[in-house]
Length: 269
Image (tube, rainbow, N blue to C red; front, side):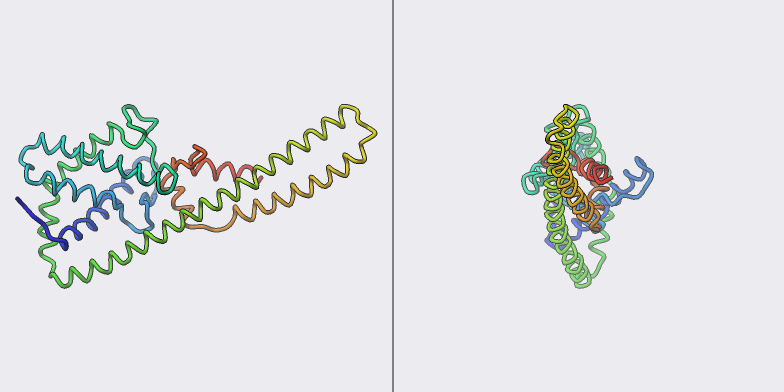
């Protein structure tokens, strides 16, 4: 039975996290014809791939000669990891980071049969072809040099995790602000509509009062609109990256992040 030390496992994690990011970028490039940083983090790595490959290697490498068991074992392990990760991320951030609800044979929209089967194929290729080469490469690097490189890479990785987490919290805060402003603007619109209806209905004796109220309502509406525009136009590279990377990211309202910001953009006009 093959055993790995912490240094080797850490190296595998970083390498496969980067490979996973490259795979996601290639997939999106083929699907949408443009570059999209599909990672949860800002850097070029997808941690779920690193964890996934390590789990598969530790659990299934000893029986890698049995292709059938290796394949179905990979499908089960990677699907369990994807389901668990999606569930935990939603519990922590109260947002659904990916959604397979529009695909057949999905489970709680966290996993679906199509991608689970594809993960099994990917793991077959990794375990039987790619990993032996990666293992030799890691063992070829001088240990001291490898440790130094890992320390630098993990320092950047954990910094990225903290920065991204705070960035997401900031996005949620801004969404609440915009939503509150939008709700008040809708209320003002309703009040204006009622006043117009009252005027059309022939309430002439109150026309001056209605006019004064209408001026006050209009002033408040313009104030909110200016505040709304200023809040929306605040630059946030993290927001833009996450919006592109996870176009179907679900917020508490059930709408995707992309839909929400598009709605805000339309309301501002």
